[in-house]
Amino acid sequence: MKLPPSVTLVEVGPRDGLQNEKQAVPASVKIELVHRLQEAGLKNIEVTSFVSPKWVPQMADNAQVMAGIQRKVGVRYSVLAPNMQGLEAALRSQPDEIVVFGAASEAFSQKNINCSISESMERFRPVVAAALAQGVALRGAISCALGCPYEGEIAPERVALVAQLMREMGVQHVGVADTIGVGTPRKVQAALEAALRHYPLDAVSGHFHDTYGQALANTLAALELGIASFDTSVAGLGGCPYAKGATGNVATEDVVFMLHGMGIDTGIDLERLVDASAFISQHLQRAPNSRAATALLSRRHAA
Ligand code: HMG
Ligand code: MG
Image (tube, rainbow, N blue to C red):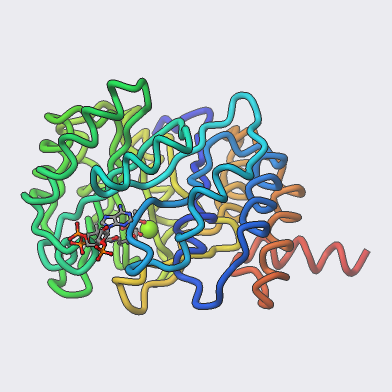
């Protein structure tokens, strides 16, 4: 088993994390969170999404948040855009990367973006072409790759099909997303292998929600395949408003603790990451949903 010597973590807390919060989080807090994350060494930050504010009110301040960030050289700022309207608004904020988000489940595609999988691909096609023409990087997310809240289990072939369609239209990287956290290690490997039929190893990442406590094990299973990029969320924030009951992404702190313990480099300063975690948790008035952050914070209090 040859594990990657270093891993890229894409911090999705400001977007996937906060999109699911019921209470409005001020743009100033989101901006401060991004600043703290980049100070902790995160080099890839998913900041916001350019979606309908009627569907996801929490992301309505997308342009304001993007405008307020003091950008750090070497950090890639990503935003989600589901259609041309979203892309046009997104490009005005000058992101480094656009994320289109499709699904391996028909029912979830309908609930999340109000169209079928094949319609979603038709909507993404001009988005991808326009973003690439502007020199902006393109990533795709494949939701419900391990299971769907409406359809149940999802076969790896369906992940392969969406990966193939995204590859054909020019999407440069795909994330295999376990939206509702039902994946277990061998099934996660099968879903990743399905994406790897159409993408090289360095263009596939894992996006694991931790609803059933499987996300760290699934991360290790992905590392065994040589996958070296993961979406994670500070303080374990997150969920999708259109996948009821789904909890947050695996906590960035927990993944960093595991990787550093295995001698795998992330470029992230765990103590500063815990500061960012404490900051947003304090704002949301709850404890971080991260075992590593909880342990490190209680050690600080005891010192
Ligand atoms: P629709 O209603 O089919 O869109 O929604 P439409 O084109 O018919 O337009 C209807 C209205 O929406 C119009 O406004 C448009 O202007 C507006 P009205 O005339 O009624 O006032 N509209 C927009 N406004 C702002 N930005 C836009 C936009 N597009 C249309 N881009 C749509 C289709 C995709 C817009 C809608 O379904 C939507 O916004 N969905 C977003 C869902 C979402 O954000 N989900 C969470 C992110 S995905 C996720 O979390 C999963 C991931 O983490 C991986 C995983 O874990 O699985 C990535
Ligand atoms: Mg997600």
